[in-house]
Length: 198
Image (cartoon, rainbow, N blue to C red; front, side):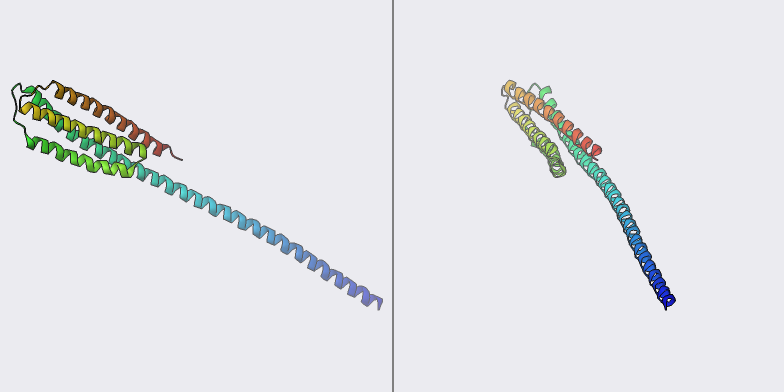
């Protein structure tokens, strides 16, 4: 009977040992599985982060290209209108006698200026605020310059003393050139900021 009892205790001990070993193995497997899941989650997060970085980089390239195109459109449109305005003013100054007022030439300048106005709106939409503000200032200053040339042309047509009108055109021209330089600087800084963004 003792041998049966010893055998039963042995079997019971072996069963407890096996259960204990199985529990430890299961716990160890659980830890290993949890570690694998954490590692997988980290890898997934790293992959997602990399995708987000690539998307952000692509978006910044796209944004820079759109801004640059808008800035160039405005600068080109302003240059076209400014050349026509300067040509008209030079032609008027080269004539010592009164020259009849030419609404068609002024209409051509204003039509070119309309193109600059449309480009100006694109720049305001593309931003940033510093460039939008500089674009607004240069737009306003050019409008003043066109108005000053128109006044000069009207005064020239009726043989008025042109001294004050010429001074007004020169002042408006200097103001326009200064705001044009400010726009270029603001646009350059904005484009550099996009390139250097993380």
